[in-house]
Length: 373
Image 1 (cartoon, rainbow, N blue to C red):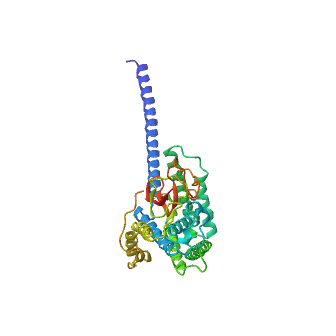
Image 2 (image 1 turned 90 degrees about the horizontal axis):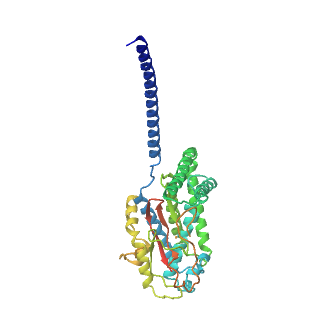
Image 3 (image 1 turned 30 degrees about the vertical axis):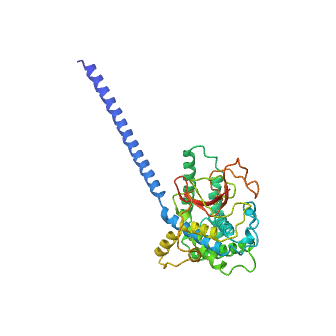
C-alpha cells in the first residue's frame, strides 16, 4: 500500500469520526428534547387531572338539590296565581285552579330553570366579587358559544380542552383574590342576593301573601347551589349543567321520562296521581340525601316531602331551555298548541322538571327528568 493510499485512508477515517461525532451529538440532543417534551406532557396531564369532587359526589349533591326543589315545589303547588310565561303552552288552563301534580311540576321546572340561568351559568366563582365573577363566566361561555361548530370528536375534545385550560389558568391568576379575607363575605352576600332574587322571581306568579315556608325552602336551595358552584371552576373536567326548555327532542341518554301529570287538555282533580308522581321524583334522591346528610354530620330527618308521600318508593320510568354556552344537541321547536302536537311529529320535551348534569364528552351524572308531549 502506497503512502498516498495510507494518507487517503487516514483522511476518510477522520471524516467518518467527525460525522459520527456530529450524529451522536445530534442524537443525544434530540433525545433530551424528547425527554423534555415527555416531562412537559406529563406535568400537563397532572395539572389537568384535578377533580374537586368525584362523579358520585356530584351526583349526590345534585340529587339533594333536586330533592329540595321538589319539596319546595310541592309545598307551594296550591299557592300559584298564574303560570310563568314560558310554560303557558305546556300547562293546562285549569292547572292553577286545581293546584295539584301539574303545579308541582311547574314549580320544579321554574326553580330548576332559574338555578341554571341565574346561578350555574352566570357566576364563575362565589368567592369573587360578583361583577368580576359574572364577567369571567361570560368569557368562559363565549369561548364555546363563538367557537366554530365541531365537525368531529377531535374538534369537540379540542374545544373542551381549550375551555378547561382557560378556566384553570384564570384560577391560577386569581389566587390572590381567592385567598383574600373578603372571600367568605363575597360568598355570603351572593347567597343572600340570590335568595332575595329567587323569592322575588317566584312572587311574581304566587299569591299574596306568599307561603310561610317559601323563605326557608329557598334558603336551603340557594345555599346548596352556591356550595356546588364553589367546586365547578376547580375541575379539570367540563361539568355541564343543562335545563331543557319545552320543545327539545327527547334524548334518552340525557333524559328520563316522568309520568303523573295530566295530558294537555285533561283535568285531574284527585291526589292519587300527584302522590305517585312525587314518590317517583323522590325515589332517586332519598337515599342520596340521607347518605350525604350522614356524611356532613347531620342526623337523618324526615323531610316534608317524605311525610306527605310516605316511605314507599316507586321506580322511575326509564328514560332540557338549555342554558348558557351549553351544547346539548336537539332542535328547538315549541309545541304547536296547548291542545297537543301533530301526530306525525316525534315526542318532544313538554316540560323538564329538573336539571341534567354530565361531564362533557365523558359521562352523564344526572339525567334530566322530563315530561314528554
